[in-house]
Image (cartoon, rainbow, N blue to C red):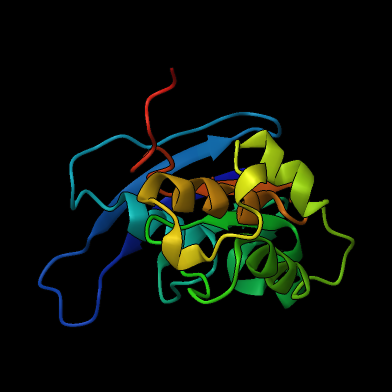
Length: 165
């Protein structure tokens, strides 16, 4: 599913690369995670894998295609939950999911089903600005799953989540 070979990335004006000599592969159906201290390059690596950062050295394959050659339909196949999610603060939870669902060319999941999955169904009509950080992160997870992607990227997926009771 993912193959990374000799990946290197340096931010503009950086004295040294943020990522250097990274090699790994992720098989179809495998769950794979990166652990490391702040500043180690985990988010940078995810931003490369999701096509947000260009100008890397080495090779990155998603499926059997080099990431540099992937077309915009690539974004129909991936789901991304960012560490700092952006939503429309004046929209309700449901309005946000419907808005983002409208950006896809494919049929999306029922927003209520996703909200129920993360325990937010009773907050469907609550404005995003009135949610706790943990609730916002759970909504972020729903948005990543909205279009039933083949590949999911989660950056700091447990940040702000409340412990289970």
